[in-house]
Image 1 (cartoon, helix red, strand yellow):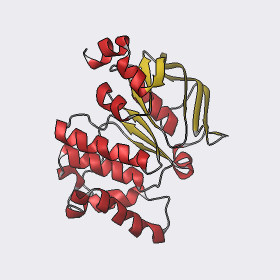
Image 2 (spheres, helix red, strand yellow; image 1 turned 90 degrees about the horizontal axis):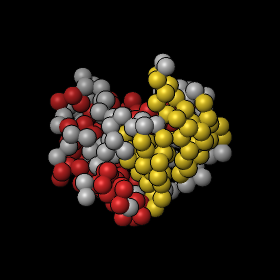
Image 3 (cartoon, one colour; image 1 turned 135 degrees about the vertical axis):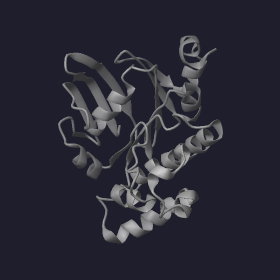
Image 4 (cartoon, helix red, strand yellow; image 1 turned 60 degrees about the horizontal axis):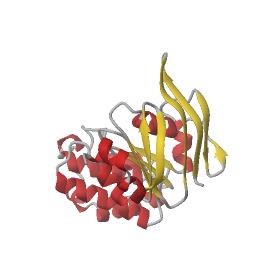
Length: 234
């Protein structure tokens, strides 16, 4: 397993957001995490990337305990997060946003990685000198993903990549996510659009009020009556 989480807890003051989360992700898997608003999905990703401190339990990455590791050290190990709401640096150009994502890389690799992202998302090359804050929502999401990919992650954490996007743009973003898995990257996808996420995932986890309540192959979760009622509107 590339990532193993056991008994993970996290608090915001006296409020416990994660209540003993257990999960595992194998290298090369695309795993989806679905659940209602407030279930703790974003908190889990923030705790995995080190932005939110864990208050109990453990996080193992590639066999090493990273539970107390600071965020920039996790990035250097190969963990990158695309945050909820994109959070691009609005006044900065598209290209400068991408270069910021490559702070762990060498000067020799940055130019090649830039071209790779421009090939993946041609609109970013077209807009490379434009202020990131003036891009459309879909273009900002592409930029946020490309910025994370500039760190050459082994594990990509994606938080609600389809939020606020038109259906056609959502399809394009999720097709890109599926291509990352096809290229051998490990992806942990948090997505409120449960049907879309489980359709492209290998496995899935369902979270409710800070706990994992169900997990299994994505196709099994799509067929599960409880999941259908609660998250698929069936």
